[in-house]
Length: 449
Image (cartoon, rainbow, N blue to C red; front, top):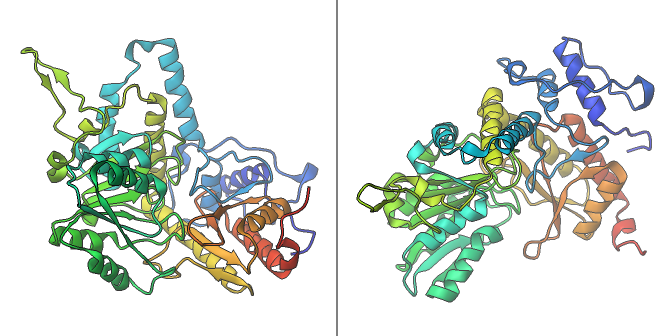
């Protein structure tokens, strides 16, 4: 990449959105200065209904919802995503209303009624959905809700997130639960190989399997339907760490067939921190105790009637109501765009990235190229350069923010591609990696102060 490279700023993105709305063809992006288009207001939901075949004009419209700072290309929503305008507006609206009139500050009836929206979005029944504050909270509810016996085993892969692993480390100390690990290749050969590895690791003492639907390390999409079916055949509960698929992939939890699914709002759903949901299949709820309490109300006879549905799992004290309702706005945005359109766009951008990286000498892909085993996360290494140096070099040179990966013995960096990213940004990342790979000796050691 030559020094004449240009940065794509918020101003340029929003200007592009305005051109798309007016029906004008999008020409080359201006570099900067007086000729750069001025910011345009974010388009509302009514303007974001997609055409039958969404093209780049349409994705410029979607990009208008995001207000990233000038010059920044952000590719780490696998950790925390930017918040679109419709979500920020809803958060602000609810916070102002409660701040000026706290008489209905809990909004219990509204949240319960809108539970139907969440259920529809993930392919579940409203009675199976609980509001949570994070994936980690959902994973803890399930893990600590089972009546474990000493010697019971929990089976999990080698790239599980701490939020899912740590509850079982506590149960190991408190209840004598045994953790068994399954080593999954990076990347694996096939779905059959993955299922076989889990099946071979099951013993008569295996009580549950904990699986990340999309591993946060390599972005591997696990064959959850096949693994859930296997667990059902063997009488083993399946708990899914679904931190990434919510907002990345079109989910149908009834079709997947798992017993439990915990998901985050702050990543691919793009609705900020302190948001999430957890699914508990209806016919296993009586086997999973609540973590903190079961809610409900006291009847005329003075007896407390606990919730009989998934609401029993969401009694956590005072909830951040604006954030919870903001999550519903994020779902509305995604439903307007279309879940299948979003997944297709995510896959289009990530495939473009992997194909470009694969052509660079010295770059190794740790993420599968199979559409069945990958989606929006891409993990790669650049020669033997320390991962933090790669991340810092790309940020310093081209203002592209990705993250380094510190799990196990991997020396790699990870990029997320989502609906607010554009093909031009993906190409800039590829060229930035190409530059670092060709000047690898300059990045082998950290710069001195």
